[in-house]
Amino acid sequence: VKQVDLLGRLRDLVGGDALLTTADDKSPFLVDHRHLFHGAALAVVQPASTDEVSRLLALCNGVGIGVVPQGGNTGYCGGATPDASGRQIVLSLRRMDRIRSVDAANFSLVAEAGCTLAAVQAAADDAQRLFPLSLGSEGSCQIGGNLATNAGGTAVLRYGMMRDLALGIEVVLADGSVISALSPLRKDNTGYDFKGLMIGSEGTLGIITAACLKLFPQPRSVATAWISVPDPAAAIAVLGRLRDASADRVASCELVPQSALDLVLAQMPGARSPGTTPAPWYLLIELTSSGNDDLDPLLESALAGAIEAGDALDAAIARSGEQRDDFWRLRESIPESQRRAGGSLKHDISVAVAAVPALIERGARLAADLVPEGFLVAYGHAGDGNLHFNVNQRPGTDPVTFRSREPALQRAIHDLVATMGGSFSAEHGIGQLKVGELERYAQPAELAAMRAIKQALDPNGILNPGKVLRGSAL
Ligand code: FAD
Ligand code: 2HG
Ligand code: ZN
Image (tube, rainbow, N blue to C red; front, side):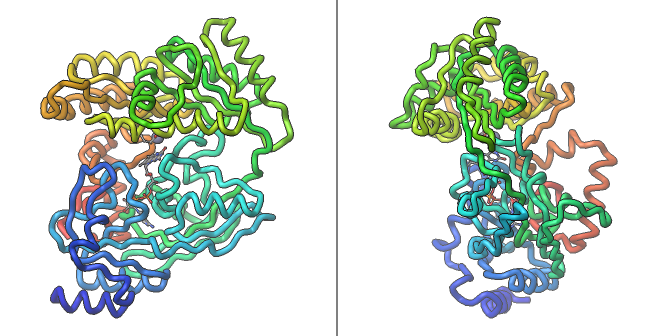
């Protein structure tokens, strides 16, 4: 088909307002959040219903046009950015933003893919329920993007990742056929785990249009502490102690180095120091319970034990909602303050929780050797064994030299993680950023199985071409 004919057919399908073709209108959709990837597109299409998505894919499959799904565009791996050919279309889910139903008695709700994570959390809250997925980007990321990346975040320790939080899913396949499996069943062993396959497939196997999500009782009691610790080994010991002492009511366990706290306090106006004894490392730990428990005294006495044992140096327990929010804001602002401070080299890695201290020790040595212009900002979801092992540029050093260190550092860190039985992509996915890494570290049989699945579900290769797996140029 000629370009004009295709645009005309897309316009007929979604309506003129939902089809963006001018450079100005398209531009926000053509660059990723971190400005690592810049693409081009024939058009940005914004369908309003599953039926429109279905007809759109049938059309693109028929004429061989690549389709790049995009949610909130907050992803870290360039998965939602089209290539530079200008022949692909971006399919934005932003108009599909209805909460279709809430079933408080079944602890579930059905949301369309374009609902922001914050909107889903609010809908659960209105029904006196909790949707626990929690990310720094929750105001703009979308539930479809969360599903497509199998997002993690700060409550995984208690509630699991996105894959653990979906009961059902509605997906449009490459040929336009719709699989509507939105049932709220908690038990269903009928055949392959199709939902599990779609979740985390980053738009390469189907377009997710809606999902039935798992809700939980709301926490009635919360206790939050900012804890100074001497080193990562002590931090992991404190986590173990608190899990024991609290009958496993630890919901979040985030590790923050002094370097990250310094960045936040320097870069974010209004950021308040947590007020604990300065230390090389900190833990942000939150206990929650759906009962009316008095968690503060419990946390206090467990932390007193940790201080006595030398695992903690000092701790502050949040005495108000405001102080709790301050602690969390310090943690959630680390990515933004890293960005404001200049260049950063990022790794999203995981190992077994007990191996986190060894990973930091060995990784820190590599970073110091390989990036003399940088300093380590390794932080994150220590309770899940997942670190954002990042290196920031030191002020006054040459940005080009700093950036040139990235390939060698990445190779060294990912090789280290592989020797420790860990993952080079814990929660952010593959996108276009890590296609080569997947080829390097996946087992050959695993990679072959992934390619076979892609070929079976998307034989013309129209779905997010070149993401996750190298693909033909569509
Ligand atoms: P996008 O960036 O738009 O897309 C991501 C991928 O999903 C792309 O491959 C895209 O093609 C595909 N996709 C999007 N929607 C669909 C759909 N409906 N159907 C099929 N494919 C689709 N991530 C974490 O896991 N944990 C964190 O703690 C975390 N914190 C963050 C903090 C900040 C400040 C920022 C900016 C990002 C953070 N992220 C985190 C990364 C990001 O927010 C998540 O990956 C999120 O799940 C992406 O959602 P999105 O809607 O923005 O997806
Ligand atoms: C977080 O946990 C995000 O804050 C972003 O996953 C991590 O910027 C990063 O490296
Ligand atoms: Zn994270």
